[in-house]
Amino acid sequence: MAEKKLKSGFTTGAAAAAAAKGALSYLLEGESPSCVEIELLTGDPVFIQMHHCSLEGKRAICSVIKDAGDDPDITHQAEIGASVMLLDNGNQDDVVITGGKGVGRVTKPGLEISPGEPAINSGPRKMITQSVHDVLRKHRIRKAVEVQIFVPEGESLALKTLNSRLGIMGGISILGTTGIVRPMSHDAYIATIKSALSVAHAAGLDRVVLTTGRRSERYAQMMMKELPEEAFVQIGDFFKISLETASENGFENITLAIFFGKALKMAQGIPHTHAAKSALTMHKLSKWSRDITKDEALAQHILSANTARHALDLVRGKHSELISHVGKLVVQSAKSYAGADVRIRAVIFDYHSDVIFDYHPDVIFDSNN
Image (cartoon, rainbow, N blue to C red; front, top):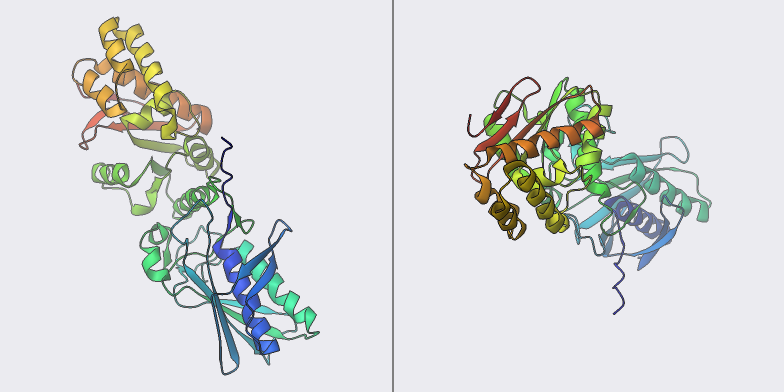
């Protein structure tokens, strides 16, 4: 049976550009467009359907429904719009881009956009400007244009993101490096990690704590209460690129605060620690168990364990040396990505927030000490 081809979608930036083009076309032609063609930053054309268009005095307003394809994210099916008007003052061909309702505003340094500006990145700004110029050229008009981007549900959508951590307040970010969302490309998540590390660096921090999700982050924050919120960065499955980026940002002290399952994958140096690699992980843990404990029965039990949590239950309290071995290999793998001079701390939690391993560059703790 042939594998189903995953459907690509378009970014919030492409949606904003299409809405802007639709609104300006409506303003100049007096007829509501059903769809518009925009050029993505890859140079490829794409047709995007209009959701709603209206005229309000000297302004035209159009919106589209964002389609993330087969890689849905927080903004999948969100309405993204643009309110457009011609300016009597201003330089010819200027496109003034502002943020309206539901578009976040940057409040911290370290991001691509300066504090005080709407969180509309350079890629979307370029697509919006290009789309507006396409319409102006078509009608042989040379005037400045104001484009206000809005997202009606942006404030509530932002609550499901890490925007407030990054200092983006009041709504979502308008993002997109190419304009197209490719299924499983992970571009948006990687961009968020890079932004978070950049904000931490701009805040003057010399240490960051990399966690793999909200729960491990919560445990790490309870453990390291002295650190500000900006120090904690959720990296998901992106082990390698997160360490490389943290090192590139100049962090010489990096803490990994993780659960045992992720630790097993990181210990093997797996760059992207997706759950799909679980079976191979149990084989490796079983081998380490056999080598370290010389207990063949334990090795076989681990090999047949359903989950990493199950495997941890088999060794917890009996074979702390095996947990310690995993933790030290996590540090070794992390150094291979971040650089030998970076000081790596590894904290491994059990599934009840207890610390079962804590490696400082100077001190090693495990649950039996």
